[in-house]
Length: 592
Image (cartoon, rainbow, N blue to C red; front, side, top):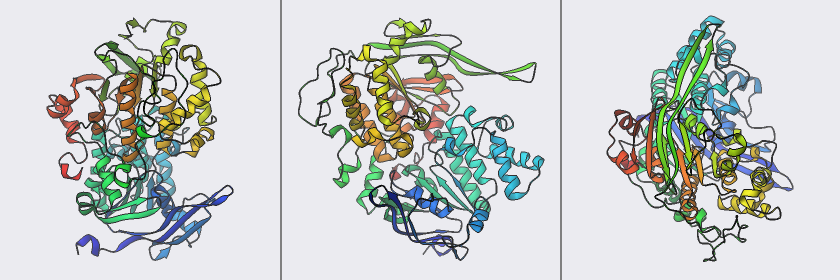
């Protein structure tokens, strides 16, 4: 038995059960009779799909389960005590100082009306009784440790002024403020680019060694888990399917579900035509592209649906004629400068996008990669005219749309859609999913030709296409997981048959199995409809699978561009090579 196994258990989970009430139904058991240990100075990875019970387990350990949980049984042993039976005051005292948690979605965890500095300093003053001056200095050190650019300026920013990756880094800094003995990290690197992801992993390693800190690392990224975890616990539908040493689980998994999770993950080494999905291994669920649709959606415009074999990928899709060699969009010399006033007389200028030019062909995918702050999302917002440019032009289908009035540009809004990185922020929380899908159909009724009596049927069809049942039509965004909300956002963008879809980190919130289904679906839709994708992502494995060409951005400028295969196999720019070397498992392909 190795040293890790012989060490004392810091936190023990014994026969944990957690259930939640359901209206007019028996309670739903989210976690069923699970047991595992987290030992001193050890990293345990909790792996599984959305809905497997990973986050519920973590919330139970932190004592943060909602009051509606009808059944919480078992033992959560820490410091010789069962944390399920101790007074709430004791758990509250230990939270933040002895155990801390980094949540999956920083925008729902950070206070939008407080600056980042005030939120971190509040933790330091309440838990460690620091003065304001000492807490401010410590706050700067923490932001430097998590590689947040310009930490002195970041103190004064609000969460909305930071990118998704920067928000997550601020959350990690807050969790580490009191140097806890146990850090629970729930998907802490989901929104981060590969280089910052590696920095965070290295940071966790250093902190673990320096303070003998234990880590419960929740993730769907098995490549990332392989670089950090000592042991892995694989969960599905509330039960543990496999547990063991990380090397054994990743290289010789015994359970077929674990094998499926490993095989579903795209890599930078190859570009298969399709990715395997969970159903290929367990025979429980078919690929999304093979889901049979009971009713064909209404026709769009003058397009006629083809009668093909039921259940085929194209049976419910309009036949589209396009030339894959034709250029749909031409971007030339786009430039954006942000000017921030500092005091009464000083201004600070930042060049976010600097002279970016490229072509996007019909029916093809252009991947845009780069670190957080490289200008990827700013570029997308300028293309859609959601942000004014400071120079350059965008030519769409032969027309320069840059100088068009809002009225003249309106028909192009249907043809150019976007799926944002954060579906929780892009979906109206007061709208049901059905209302969110019907709104674009009704706004663009003249262009789509979808009649009022058929728009509900069209919306339901797209929900099925992205793997959500008809019951999702009547639910609100908060009733879904992050991955399910992203699928709703994708369905909303596709209901009005756009010519181009900008996908801004569309699968970053999805576990690997659902990610594979969505990526296969995107390819199928592109083959059938001739949609062009502008694909923004920090996951280079996903970019390798989906993209025909790649554009590499650094500090707003292009450092390399060309065919995806050539760039991944023979990168020329040092920055591109650094991005590839930062991919989890890049140096250990056997783990992928």
